[in-house]
Image (tube, rainbow, N blue to C red; front, side, top):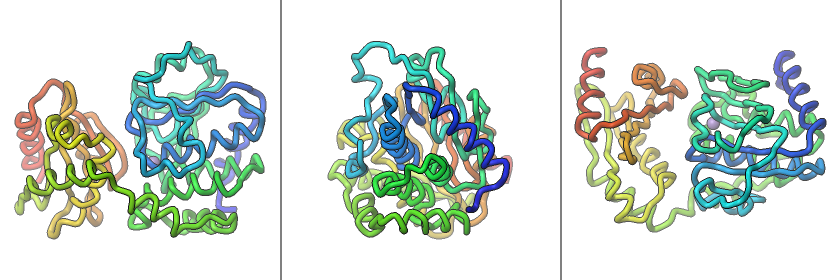
Length: 326
Ligand SMILES: [Mn+2]
């Protein structure tokens, strides 16, 4: 079992808390990705099997491409939620480096015990219990050990964890190691169909998402001196294409294929902020750049926002910094 003594201790602690309590709230960062959602859905199944009440709520809806995962339709979205206050005993926050990153879900959390499970650098240890492991590919890879400890692993749960690992490693292109593969081996033994999962995740793009990609690629920019490529997605482009925030994942994936780059980035216009998503090529560290602007993430994938700025002024600020440090 590829888990250290320290990790084993915290897994045991988390499992004891799970056994002791009845009502659980699960959430992840504001725009849920395959990792965060995979963990939520895996835990929905695990906790239900243990006879617990489970409620999942996220700031925004997750991509439809994950709708094949068990329990997908049970995920609530904050803006649509009209129910009463959620009285959970325990809130589990997946894949989130800081408490503010769960957005308005904070107001639902109330006085519950918080379990923080994450793999980002710079996690603020905001939970009552914190399990942070930066060397893990995904939170799904970590949560696998909890499922195993609770003796709950089944095919549905294994599918969720596989989606976490598959998407957070960019289909096994980055951020994984021999320990990741040994977890994947265990998931395969449970009988998951990786071909079916990959087909669902990657061959399931909406027309809106592809139209958004079209806009993004037409406006592709390249700076040879900084060895970077980028594109901008304006609010009106999202409106015109009817694409969602999550649909921009496809844009980021394509940006990473641009030749002669050390890193690439996507700029998105949100209500009162300009959001930058950075991806490195080779060993270039984009976390340090994001941290300069108050953001964070991983060495190879990071992000930050500049508030109350126009796209042009945010880009100007960003390039000024890049030129200074180069
Ligand atoms: Mn993750």
